[in-house]
Every structure is written in structure tokens, then in C-alpha cells.
Length: 138
Image (cartoon, rainbow, N blue to C red; front, side, top):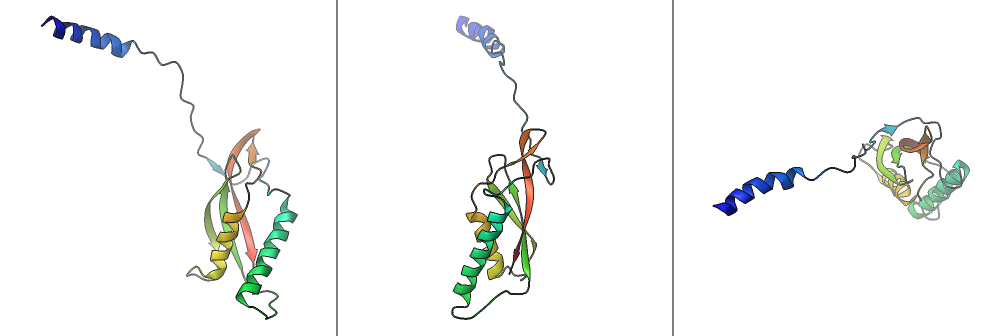
């Protein structure tokens, strides 16, 4: 009986004796469309355009071997998020050539997933998530 009494008396003391020492910082989940400093591809947009054209040329060689294919009429537009660490996630089609997600859409996604980390965007001096859009002319 004495043990039960001690447990009942000491239990509330130990529960309330723990003091919180820090505050939990709120996590910013906002994805911006426009910020003061937009995300950049490493090497700049000229480098990105050059790599995209090289990728497209190799794709044409693979799909149409031995045939001169300069350009297919159309483009795929993909939107994605550049995170605070430069990581690329959440690619979404804004415009497609094939509503059933054809070869060109799959290749655009493949290119997006193969990109290196970007230089993140900044708002008020702080790195933030930014949604970017990239056209793929085919």
C-alpha cells in the first residue's frame, strides 16, 4: 500500500518536472513561383540549352538511325521544384505532344531526373523552394 502511495505521489512530479528547453522551428513548405534570385542551372541557361540540344540530337539518332531528322514539330513543357539544397523534384507536364505520355514525354522526364543539383533560388536572403518551368522543343 505504501508503494502504491509513493508511486501515485511521485509519478506526477516526474511527469511535470521535465521542462521543454527549446522551441520547434516552423517548417516553411511554401513553393514560390517568382523570387528575387531565381534558381540557376550550374553553368547557366546557355549550358542547359546546349545540353538539352545535345540530348535531343542523341535521342533522334537513337529513334531514327541513319535518317536526317532536324526537328519534330512540337514541344513538351515540364514544371518542377528546385529545393533549398538544389535538388529537383515533382516534375509535372504543363504541355505534352502525346496525351498518353509518349516517348518524348518520357525522355523529357529522363532529362529532368538526370540534371545535377541547381543553384537554389532565394527570397529575402533565404534559400527557398521555387517552381520552374522548362520547355523541350522536339
